[in-house]
Image (cartoon, rainbow, N blue to C red; front, side, top):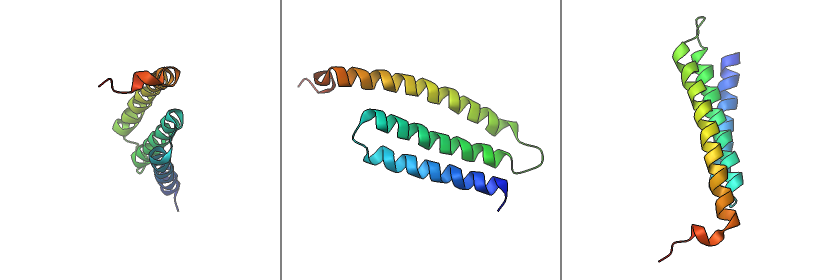
Length: 96
């Protein structure tokens, strides 16, 4: 198996494991980490697909870099929301 195949396999495994943990975890922070793992698997697969030929395609690499920036932003906002919900659990419930 080539290096691209291995990277695709590892990316798919990371995505699958992150998705399963995201759907089964009760804790918000664990879900956020699982979302990051699934996103990392998708980005790894995207970069592996970009390197299939001798001349790497720049567009998937640019998309992966943009995905990394978005992941950092979503992680920060998610941690702030999780901290707010855990410090004041009544705030997360509906007032009706």
